[in-house]
Length: 134
Image 1 (cartoon, rainbow, N blue to C red):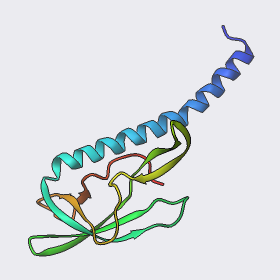
Image 2 (image 1 turned 90 degrees about the vertical axis):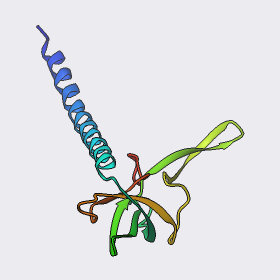
Image 3 (image 1 turned 135 degrees about the vertical axis):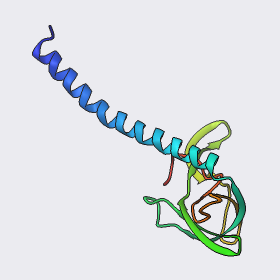
Image 4 (image 1 turned 30 degrees about the vertical axis):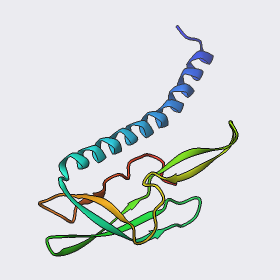
């Protein structure tokens, strides 16, 4: 049988793990949902970036893309996924830089769009995969 101090420590450790478990589950569900969309959205087209909204360091960038399917024009927006790369002097890391997973992009660039052939309004920016958003 645990002492009162042991029970208190066990209780607080349990409280600390609850947010970690919840966040992990959210990331796993998000990844699974994205993977499912990539598998079921079989229509392919190119979309043109019409706007990139950057609200600053504490907010993610939003990419607005316009694409055409069967004579109709659609627009989607997604949070730009980021990747971290090390800033180095020689082999010594001195910081990190966030860059788009999509590479260097700007308004007017073309991106691959995957859409649901039955409902072309449902679409994703195909290579915009990741967890980090801002």
